[in-house]
Every structure is written in C-alpha cells, then in structure tokens.
Length: 436
Ligand code: ADP
Ligand code: ASP
Ligand code: MG
Image 1 (cartoon, helix red, strand yellow):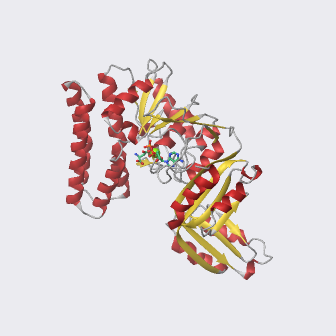
Image 2: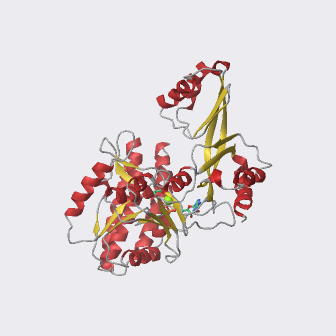
Image 3: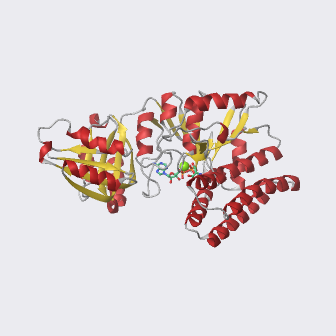
C-alpha cells in the first residue's frame, strides 16, 4: 500500500491511514511519500545552496522545521511521544543546518531530497507506536537499489528485502520510504519525482504481492487531466499497457515507469482515494476490460527534431544512423514519423540536445522546435472502434498538429502540438471523444 504526499500531508490523514492499513490481518508493506510540499521545499533549499544563497536556504529550513514541529504537536497525544518525535525529526534539521556549511555537490543534493521520506515515515511510525500498533519501520536505503544506468535491480531488492523481513517474523506490518534508493556507488539517490509509486510497484513485484495499492487524492485514473479539464470521470478498469502509456505520456497520478514491474510479475494495481476509501477506484490488470478510448493525457516539455535529406530517398540504413546518435547520447525518442525525404522525431530529455543536433547535421538539414506537447489518446483496440479517428480529427479542427503517431500499438494515438494549444486540445477532446 502506497500513500502519496497529500495522503500523509496532515496529521488527521495519518490517523486515517493507520485505520486503512489495520482494517484486516493481511501482511502489508506500506510505502510513504514525503508530506505534500516537503520535496518541493527541499528542492528549493538545495537550489539555494547550489547558487550559494545560504541565508535564504537557512530561512527555508527554519520555516520547514516550524511546520514539522506543529505537525508533531497535532499528530501525537502524549508528551513522551511528542518529545521523542521532536528529537528524531530534529536530527534531520540538524543535518540540513550542517550542510549549509559545506560546499554543494550532486551527491549532497540527493541527500537533501531524501529527508522528506525519511521524516514522514518516522512520524507515521511514531504515531503507530503511540497507538500500540505492532509494526516495523524498515529503511528503503537498505534494500532499494539502482544500477549505473539508474535501472532498479529487482533481484537484489528481493534478496535484501526478504532478508530484512526475516528478522521480524512475528510482525506483519512494515513501513518504508518511497522514492529513495541507493545507486551503484552506494550513495543515497532517488527514483525521480513522483517515484514513490515506482517504489511500491518494485516492492510488489519483488515480493510477489497479491496487490499493489496506490492511495492518492483522487478516485482513480480519470479519462482526462482533472487539473486542466473541468468534467472528468474515473475509469473502472484498464490494462497494464494502457496504464503504462498514460503514465508515460503525462497522467501525473502514476510515475512514468511505475507500471512495468507490476506488469512483468502480473500483480494487479489499484488506484484508490485516501479521502474516499469506499470509492471504486481503478483496477489495472492484464485485461483492458472494455474496448474503445479510455483516456487522454498530455506530456509537456517536448522538443521536435526534423532531419531532411534527399539522400534518404531509396536509402536503407538511414534511420539506423539517425537513431544511433540518440543512442550515443542516451536520449530516448518518443514519437517518430517519416516521409520519403524527412524524419521527424521527439525527445523530452534536452541534456545533450546541442551535441545531438550537431551530429545529426552530417545526415541532412536539421530543424528543431522547442516547447511542444504530446497529447496521447489511449484505449483498447482504438483502430477497431468505429468513428474514433473521425471524431478525433473532427474535434481538432482548429489545432495545428505538428505530428501524428498511429499504429505503433493498438492502444495509442499520439499527436504533437505546440504547448500553447494543450488546454484547448484536452478540452475539445473531452467533448469530442467522451461527450463530457
Ligand atoms: P500523490 O502525492 O498521491 O502521489 P499526485 O499528485 O502525484 O499524488 O497524483 C495525483 C494527482 O494526479 C491528482 O490529484 C490529479 O490532479 C493528477 N492527475 C493528472 N492526470 C490524472 C488522471 N488522468 N487521472 C487522475 N489524476 C490525474
Ligand atoms: N516525495 C517525492 C516527490 O515529491 C516522491 C513522491 O511523492 O512520489 O516527488
Ligand atoms: Mg505522485
């Protein structure tokens, strides 16, 4: 069971989730995110340090500390429990204050970002202890591991976690941190923003769990982005493939990589609402459950690159040469379309953009468009569903579409549009595809 930032972000919510996790006798591993807002605050503190704005960093640390002190006072009842928690959380603020004095590094940044999950789990464990709920707080840094390519090592996670759990044979309830892990150098690292979902799915896969429950602040995966579009509805069931596409193409409710571990080990994933525990939520399993379009999602920060060359005409091996440039710079490609004289593709990682553009020039004229958005239409057997394509393009009458990807899989049509058209696109699709 994984509880996100808003689910643990208030003392009364922590009280609530203690009820949710003790509702039955099943053994459980509970993964917690940082309290909502904390990771953002830590990112800011780290950025201040990086730019040597130490006074601002200190102010932010003090503000965060005051917030945690109040949280402890509202979370716990007895003075004894409060004092103990204040002392434990105090150590993390001591650490933050010490790092104010040392020079910034990437490794230090990761240490700073890890404080949120370390603190939220300690607070929750303190509450469970006060309530006399038998449990064990197990450190994610002792079992959650990634390799030098930042890929999780499920085999190692399984061995280490099993060893750890074997120490506590009499216990059935375990609490651990989402998001944080150790890298191949043994340093503290993380699974990128929103990574607690990924932690949960990796643990579920490693331990062959019966189910992986992702508890959040909404009643499941909706048909459209509820942050942007007014009327959206929850989807009852979808396939791993559909959920993976939605997560990857921008549905924030799931970390982009969080589906594959569950899918590989065929573990059902449930998206549930902490604030409305009786709502149905979304079940993600192998079977899609129904045919047709399920949802649309949008992914920002996309760069489109076009390589135009008359040499492509009748040439084989041309695409390989182009793709090799991206491989060399470890940059994944999201969309690809080709014509006889040009290839257009998109990337979301701009770390090596200049080098990539330079090397591509060997193959033809290169054009680049920044600030694009991918809108993905995801469902089951989209092509076989009558009128979907017609309704899709009818609704997009006034939107300048830069690229279309169709046919790559049975459950996705992707469009590339300039970012400023995202809102309008998601709104017209809500009407055109879902009648909402
Ligand atoms: P948590 O802190 O629990 O991990 P997140 O904020 O990461 O929660 O994810 C939940 C949020 O995702 C929702 O509040 C909602 O605004 C957003 N969201 C974006 N797209 C979707 C979607 N298609 N369905 C449901 N929620 C979505
Ligand atoms: N606390 C981390 C973040 O805000 C991880 C998570 O919430 O999933 O990105
Ligand atoms: Mg999240």
